[in-house]
Length: 333
Image (cartoon, rainbow, N blue to C red; front, side, top):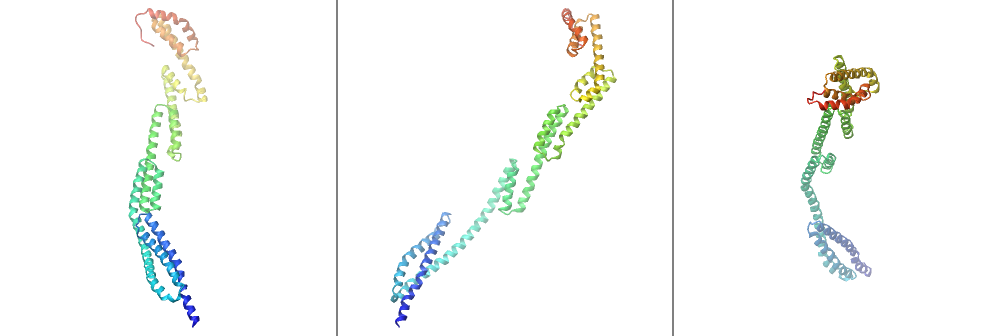
């Protein structure tokens, strides 16, 4: 009988272990309430957590004191029964709050998803307008991977690629048009510089890579035209026209080509010098001193190393003086 009474007196102390568990749960509820209130989601959970902690701390010493007295076990149980019920209610409420929080997060995710997509759309269009193609594609990848709008992302990628290709075509077309103007004016060095600039910008575009060869082909075509014109002038005995073409050809002929034309050009200049000699003699014979002075000046200027130029230098002062005494100014040669 005494043994049973001792066991009965110790038995109430076995349930006192539940208070540390309850206290830990109350602290967890309090921490959750602090987190939710910090995010602006209400103070209900925080209040419930605070009440749980305070209630546990208040009832724990009482329960501990009652557990030491086996004779008041029934009193303790009657006192603790409402506490147990309240804690169960807190537990149920905590579960409901957790479920509501999950639902709230999902609802917010759905609500903000459309706003995020619209913000990405605007940002993508702004990057396209600035021709920031790489930045636009990065935002499209975010729309695809983060928000999951794969079809729309693919459509926008195609749009960006098309606009990028069109931008490249316009730039290349502008550069080619500039090259056409340079080659039409025989500005070959400027045309090559523009081709090199385009190659640096678009090194993989075949049309751009072939531009230097095309410019050289145009240069060779123009040189051949000059050669053909030169031969035509020689055949027509157009000495002045042939000399004008020779001066242009000087920028196009290779040393080998120039050597091949050397004899022809030498004879051409001999004919020109003889032509000037005859004109000078005729002008002096007819006392057309102004014409004579201009012919002599041309010889000295254009053919300075010839014997005729040496002779003209000796006569220039005299011809200038006689030309100054002439009232009528004949037409220049």
